Image (cartoon, rainbow over all chains, first blue to last red; front, side, top):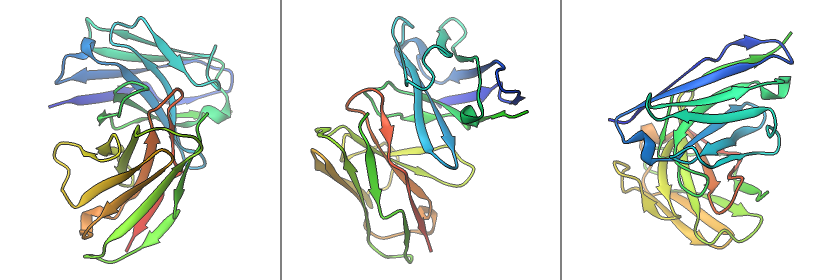
Length: 118
Length: 106
């Protein structure tokens, strides 16, 4: 059974940093691209970033380029999202999902809440 | 970025009804269109991919059609568990984008 479990979300002040993790199990992790999607009440679902199975290629939306870094450790079956210079607009539930920018997202984690506020 | 527009934004229906949700892309996305279902407080769940391909385990009352810029999701006979929010997503190019959602309630 495919399982994706996010962690790391919390309250952080504007300008702060945070690293989200997504522990994967039940599939050959290194064979699949992985994606981060966030959700806010106001903007709905927003694709944020993706990384290929090898980690060699990454993709970002313009709003997070230069601030967020997606990475993965295939030896630990874990996906990461390093977030810096956080702003209130980054407040959202962050989901990790299996799949790439050119694919459907066939499995999702339960999400982790990031709140950026002073 | 490709804009995805769903209609309606909300829809009231009854168990047993047939309903259709429309998704329009701002440019041609060929058939790279996916549909997700989300219940409150839960993660989105993939229903259909590549316009009309049913994800494993999804009931056959769900179907999809369309091409180019106009796509539809149809539920042939609503069941109580189908009352949720539905999102379309284009996976034609980067960044992938979602529709704003259609809330289906009783």
